[in-house]
Image (cartoon, rainbow, N blue to C red; front, side, top):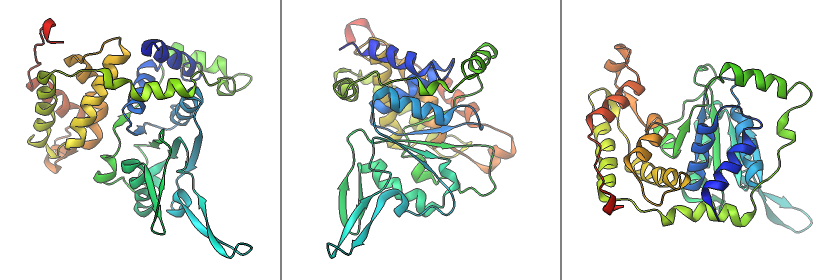
Length: 316
């Protein structure tokens, strides 16, 4: 199978619904390939939910959407045991996490107790109810959305849960011509009703296992560790990136290399996924916030501070 061809087919299919966002679609695919989870953060109406639905449809996977609200209970996600009078025993009723792709819509509107209900599922691909552990789908993938400008009635995700997301992707507003095309496409009906699955189970499995064939030179690994280490000792950051961030950064770079037709990683692969991996894991100090500093600025400074490794052709 040709992984580049599969990527192009996926992007082309989803681009029938989400216009001009090929890079965001590719990074969503990268996160799925490395077995991570994605937090989609952007202002309302930019297509976060539509992107999640069209991605699931394109891959031919089961899709479940849960609207997170303050009254949502943990068992509303994981499921619970219900007493069956006819059988005289408790029967387990699976919740929405028993799917392939779970869209946790506006995840920050639920209470921390409910938010944490999917932590085990995200980290270990299983969930435990009444002392019994239930295995989830091998393709289990959480796509959570949140709006960065709404704070009333929301519960910010704790650092431990944010760290479970491999990537945070911002879609952004479409360009003028793309927005015109969007208006034209939805005059009669929504185009998401027209897109069909384009991958079969074997191709999905291939995508999930493909990065095993990618090599990473030690100089690139050292570059990754150096960047992550700089976040831990930066004077403007109260919290730096975790070792899990280093792992996500390496695997994300491996997937990016593969999608660009290479079986080895170059420093540019690391830089291309760096913001998505690190941004949501970094917390500014109170002094930095007073100075109106932004995480983007700090990240850019760190990237400029850490020298890029030089890889010789005979080393890749």
